[in-house]
Image (cartoon, rainbow, N blue to C red):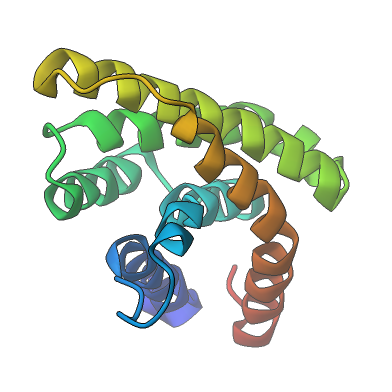
Length: 164
């Protein structure tokens, strides 16, 4: 990433997504709100791969996934595989995704997050012997709901900073 062409913005949004992925809610807030956390990192990686596929690579996605593994205490490589898959999917179909409306992109993102969460659930069940739950749908649904706002915010930032 070349800092002179807005690479710092891509890095800053990835760091912000990592922070939003692990930040805790204030103690006074209801605890059930913590379950409504969207898949921030997947959404940011999906945006940058869709908008600038030449700037977001598999190695970057894999390293961000390894950082997420450390933050979540997941088996190493689990989130790297998920983010690398999102990156490949974005590379493969970025021209099509750009033509979709924001709602259609949200539906694609819903499917991507849902498949990633199911994969994470299967691996965590094998490694940690955790049970299955319907909670796997919540990050996908909240990501779908937050996507239009995040897309507009990141698009505006991309234009203002002139990321190429």
